[in-house]
Image 1: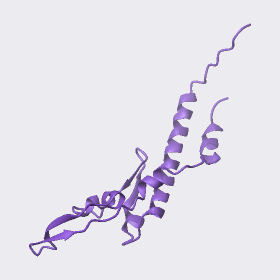
Image 2 (image 1 turned 45 degrees about the vertical axis):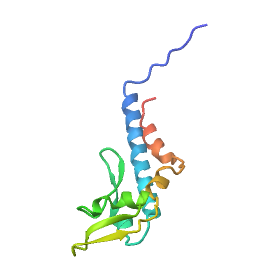
Image 3 (image 1 turned 60 degrees about the vertical axis):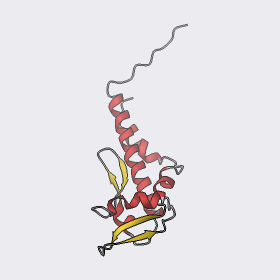
Image 4 (image 1 turned 180 degrees about the vertical axis):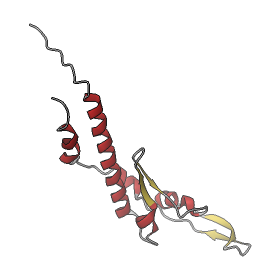
Length: 131
C-alpha cells in the first residue's frame, strides 16, 4: 500500500498568514466594540475616545485622557482602587482622603467573551488559495 504525501502549494503559507491577519483584525475590532459597549458611562470618555485598535499588531488598548493623573484612568476603572490619600488636592495644598472605587471591568469581559468566527473572514482569503 502506497502512501500519498501532501505537498502544499508554494503560496500556501502566504494565504495562511493573510487569513491569520484577517482573523486578528476582525477579533480586535469585535473586542473593541464590546469594550465600548461594556464601558461605564460616567463621563462617556472611555466609550467615545478611550478604546482604540492599533492595526499594526491588532491590539486593543484603553487610553486615559492624556497626561497623568488621567493616563492610568482605564486601569483604575477596570480594577478599582483602594482608599488612598490625594496630596495637594485640586491644587489647594490640602490632603484629601479618597474612599476608593469599585472595579467596573469592561476590557476583560470583552476579551474573554465567546465568539463565532464569521464565515466571510476565512472564505474571502481561502477562495483565493491555489488548489
